[in-house]
Length: 219
Image (cartoon, one colour):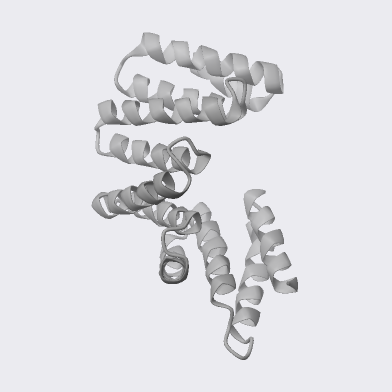
């Protein structure tokens, strides 16, 4: 339990981008878990691989991240099967493959992750939206902006249902659609989405917040 608590604390540090603090905690926890007898706890090790691999992805250390995500995915697939945690790891590995320009492999991971999400969580779950957002980005990398826009509209609908129209998640979805429309040179529609996103951030964060200012700079 103490090791798991340290891993969970390290995960919080990763979210706060405090990687220098999180990394030694995760490495030490992984070493300790692997030494537990009789038989190391597979799922705890897989969870730690997932957190450490995810952190390396954030840092752009894709070579270090990929084998960790592969190990995590192999364990969760074998032990948990079609489970949301398996979908989450597939999504993370798909994003890594996308960032390293292996688009066909990334699409396979995203499609598998999406299928599990829809089966276990439903089409309107936030994790489903997260996978769809990555899939949309992949389509944009492949210059299929029309498909990207369709997918991002699905994400917006999910965010509005799951978090409400006045939420930061909805604002982010609106900004993503706006960027896609900008790429398609549909400036009027892009402005409409950006204005909606700006109003949400103004109400929730205030005019002086950097996120609100960032949207104003795009208008």
